[in-house]
Image (cartoon, rainbow, N blue to C red; front, side, top):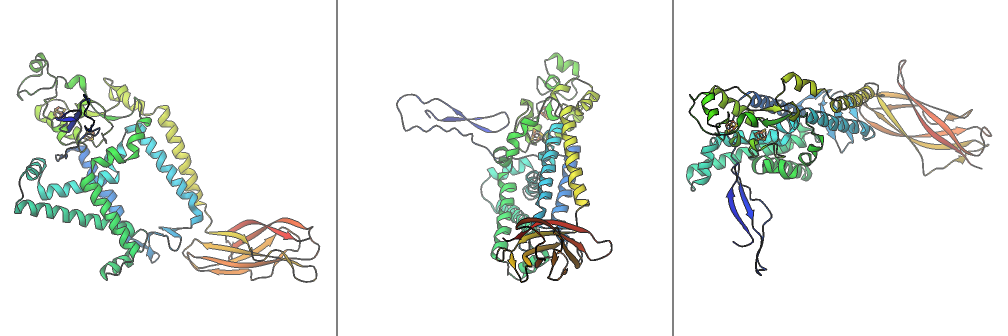
Length: 487
Ligand code: SF4
Ligand code: SF4
């Protein structure tokens, strides 16, 4: 093939297209600039890190699938009710005006990501990212229906048979069920999940609910079942900018080159002095670290951006080292700065300036957000001047302005609020000063405010509305506005 590529097998088992230059005058030749990706069949692995990954799979999925079914005060404990513009998180009720807390939460998430990445690289990717978690679950289903790596390769390479059809159908049915259940749960955070379940049972889902269940279900099925490592490698923006947060003290999964090279098979009984005399290191070149890798890379080739720090290669290599009676840790978490230094040096470098700055910023933002949440008033008020009615005379020189007050009760109890106005001598309200607002509801009230004759010059005057809970120790909220006096 001229000007095209010839397929060769990479050390990690991937098919690589070698691109050759176009020569001659054949202008119809097409040169592929893309690498062809072979399917990856990760081998199952067990070990300390693998157990931790499963702990996190269970923990995150218990929370995700379980939370919408929890109830508190006879309502769903966590519900983002977009149609009612009300967001319930356990005891707290938020309104769109509380967007500042969402901003705070996003800043906390970003700073946590910076901190964890600076300390231990892609910990999030390897253990808690939904893509990793769902891929782990889908891989488990794949192993359950089709067997481990070698059986799956054999099944894919074999011709169509009844057994193959049965296994593949079973796998896709379980995947689709998990995907749809995930989509249903996701929508259940925005629509009361018990109503949603009833609607599903009665085949009476609304078009948007149906669309989002199918969309999210399909995304889960596609990303975790088919795309897998491609999402991490080509779609996730985090993989692209994480290197900016790495330094030489960041813990990364790395292969101990000086100890492992040269690689080579040897009898299990061969003494270290003997194989070292033959120029071999501790790596027996079994290839298991490549076979367990969900992104199909060979960690022995050094740090690669595809590595999601899942530590599967550490677990499997440790098991190989155990079998060979070599010390563990040929592949391990380590920082380039700490190579060949004692572990205590590594832990000292964890507390370096960058980490301390991220930690201080994170603590400061967390204190601000949670402190403000704890001190948050149990209701909110918005004051809007009535645009349909500007300042007017209402007889004998009395001037009246009309306002609209939105009172948002963020508690689970019905409340009565007392309204007052101040700022100009004699200023008073002529509409009702007591307002009842049901629990977790917002109410608009029209408020007429009058000023006796000649108490202020023509123009705009600052005034304040004082709104307080109508009980002895009630909280008070003060909102500013202006009172217009016409010429
Ligand atoms: S698992 Fe360990 S011993 Fe086997 S090839 Fe990988 S690094 Fe070498
Ligand atoms: S190289 Fe190791 S840690 Fe990195 S993705 Fe592969 S198996 Fe996971």
